Image 1: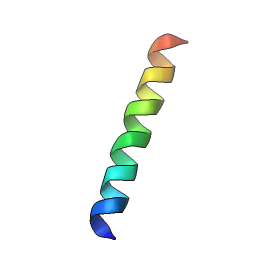
Image 2: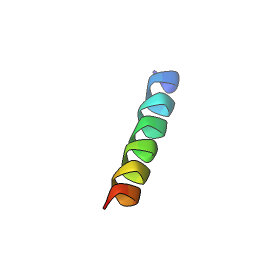
Image 3: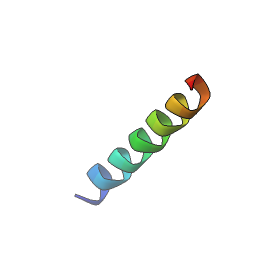
Image 4: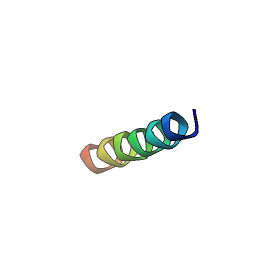
Length: 23
C-alpha cells in the first residue's frame, strides 16, 4: 500500500508539473 501511495504521489506531481509547464 505504501508503494502504491508513493507511486500515485509521484505520478500526480509529474502530471501537475506537466500541466503547469504546458499551460
